[in-house]
Length: 111
Image (cartoon, rainbow, N blue to C red; front, side, top):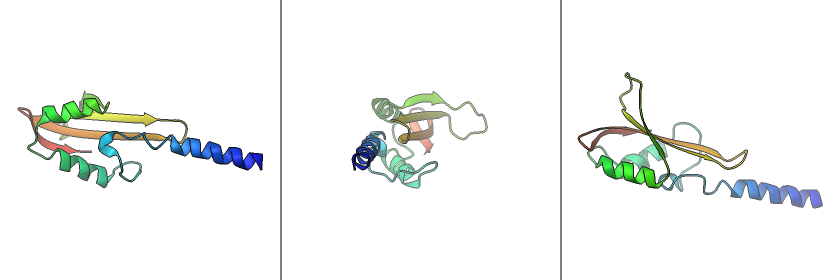
């Protein structure tokens, strides 16, 4: 009986710790690995082509994304942002955003 209670408590602790592991821009979306159409749809809805790149960068910094440049010359994207969450063995997540801008305006954005 004690073992069952301990296992239940441990399971709740492990799974409960996952609840806030995503960035605000990803909250409430289904948790999946790899490409997620729901996240990309939200991203493009919030920052559509033609929107302000400095606003995108400010929000990503506020949400604790790590910003970088895409160094692959064959990529259509020039900038990247990465958010990694790791809360224990079972709670790992990664969100990536890629975009290209010209003169402060987003001309392409994706995940």
